[in-house]
Length: 111
Length: 112
Image 1 (cartoon, rainbow over the protein chains, first blue to last red):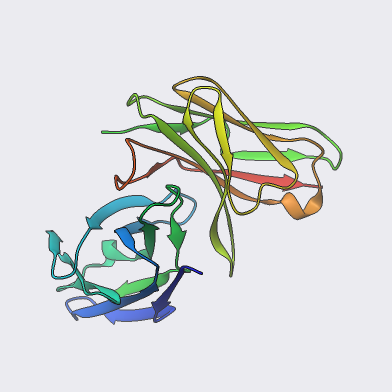
Image 2: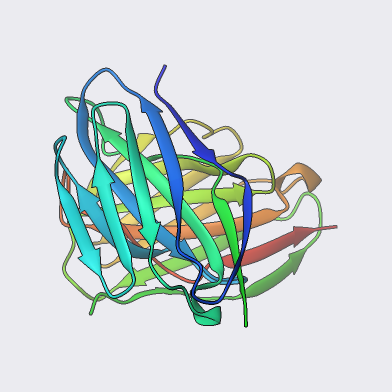
């Protein structure tokens, strides 16, 4: 069964304090790994897609990386507006387009 | 930018009612999805559609049905609402396999 585990469940940082969020996955064959940001009361907002081990994507203070077993979302010098829940999801090869989501990491950045 | 619009942000219904949740996307995407999101359980797929009038069950289809009469519109139907269907419902659309799914802002549904 495909599984996605995110850690930590919650993370508190001071503004400017860099850190990483982890997404471990177990799938029969990876078609793509997706990162989303979700603000309270809103739908998930797409951030990145990663397709193969070694791939990296960057956007402002965020950088996503992928290995064969896990993905990291690195946050460099975060600001309070980066506070949100970050969701990781995988889609498997040959199957439906279903996304299997992790339960998310709730990030709080204090000024 | 892709825009996925869900007709209601908040909805309160009574048990036994038939409930319709509507979703419209403006990017000519082939595929559309309905998820529900619950604390501690994350997002779970209810149904999806890869073409007009085509649908497939997701992980938790019991008590739900869907309708896709036009490419841009995907409706979720609760045939006879029950309290355990109180949840946040999220609609999404995508261009195809391996492409990102883009979500609407959700409908928070309460069944009393």
